[in-house]
Image (cartoon, rainbow, N blue to C red; front, top):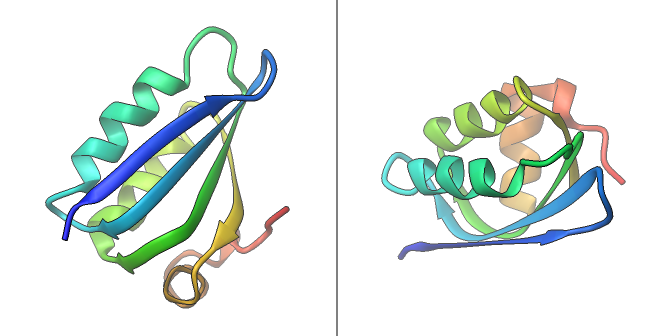
Length: 97
């Protein structure tokens, strides 16, 4: 299965990035590319909607963590799979809206 990434600008400083499908070694570069396009022009917060993610591998976690280098990252929705992986691997991202 592949991955679908969409983004919606929410005002001047926030963008919501929605990811659906598998976030793994094959698809993590696509998240990086799509996020780079979305996080421009004064965006300070990236809201990640991961409710539709069915698999989250270590490369996907790395991409989520790397987004934190350029902007504040907030997980607004998570699937059970994502929630479990995040709690185990990078609990500092557990805070959600």
